[in-house]
Image (tube, rainbow, N blue to C red; front, side):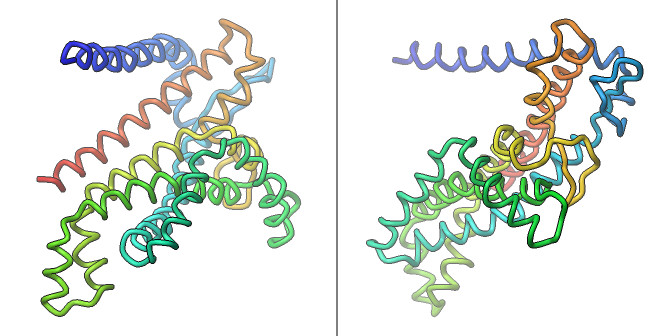
Length: 280
């Protein structure tokens, strides 16, 4: 069994290295041809233009950052409060009824989220804010906020339940209320697990493509709450199907994948360092 586990561990590492090497080899040619500064900080993307193509991905980077941050701001508080409710407040029968709903949210395909957002959310935003079109960064943020909820709720609830009962008994014995115990004792004691749930939510928000493609409008604009925008992931998904093999356009899409991969790795390293310091 030790040998089997060791082999499985090395297989996982090998896949990560293989993906890294492939993205580096595929993404560097376009960056070298376009120029690193022009590629990362260019504000114009027009890859299909035959006479004057442009490959600046700064709008995609900023849109991905703002979209992810917006989803975190909306989704994390709701997810953590729901986890506290299920773990500490809700009666057992009510909690048993809510948990399957949370699990169902996790099992819904992303294309269904996109379909519901396109049919319900986008028209609602259009009518509410009197816009020409409702597909916007706001719609993408709302869809992402809902999509990250299952990961945050499930992992946070598990972490909260793992806190020893002695913490609760000691807090109540010192005169704290149930609410004070939940938020000032139990939640801080489970902060490592809660932070891990946020990491999972961030990973899903950054890597989502299909649902965002259906509600964000897919236009290479600088980010604006009510503007049609394009994320790093949707830029790849929307153009890869018709980009010619070996063309600069296709290589630039690989370069976007490399930037996205580096972006996710940096976020994971940063959050893991924060978790490690927190655990120490």
